[in-house]
Image (cartoon, rainbow, N blue to C red; front, top):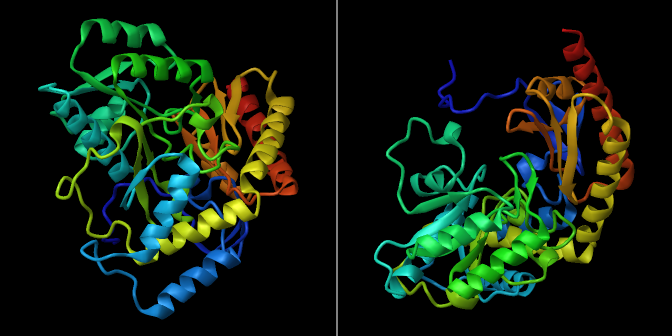
Length: 395
């Protein structure tokens, strides 16, 4: 009997070794990783720069001190994040949930400072922002929320890519302080916000003096070919929650602010015991420096396009395929019916992937994946999907 709480429907595979974009299980079987620990392992496995940096940090003996003292590596990480985001202040935490929780608190405090007694945040249908009570309430999935009511109030839900719905809220609800949007919804099914929609949302925020919160926990940090999706749209948000790929496997999150959100938090307003400790910050600095020096943003755009086009060419007209979509190395293949069984079938074929929103195959490879490995993803995935569709058609 395992004493691990039963909160995951785990696959019967344990990975024990990794190199680049490849993993090996306990029996020595080799797998091509097209998931990266759900967009976490930016540099893949065993990246020399990251391994050296972490080894040096371990050798120092100082893995944690606390935020009661200066942490020079935290200052270095914050400088790098400010440079790539274009924003001003960074709060470090341990996960995307915590980064989004901080963003919600920033928005509420901003609202109170504007004289709003009960500040509200506009959020999107099918969004996923976390599993704490506040982020769960912001999330647009009844499946995730069910059984944890009462939910936290203060969230107004609208469809993604619908500016008229946001304008209607602006006209009738004077309690709104912020808009919170995933530019690409990951858990929701790789649903991509149109760039003109994001620009229009930003214009509404400027007019109404709302904060624009761009949740880039999953879609940010180079995955789409730029550091962040909002950079494709050509503007700066006020708040950007980050996590997942920020530490290339070491748990770390960050809430980054600028514009109207700058200076909202003061000493005592928020905190984290482990957030920003020397171990996590070493991983952040090594990850961001490697991404920049190795051209991983351009690589993500190039290899992602190759994978999307390869899948679309092979499956795009097949009955049962709705769409192949995404940006860079954030790719969704939507089918007309639930396809969760493909996860196990892919493992049998030596390919690691995931199914989200019941019927969307989600691919989130490490950003170090090269073109030959990208082609291999296509070569392994396409036959599985064809066989799945043929089986369902015959049933």
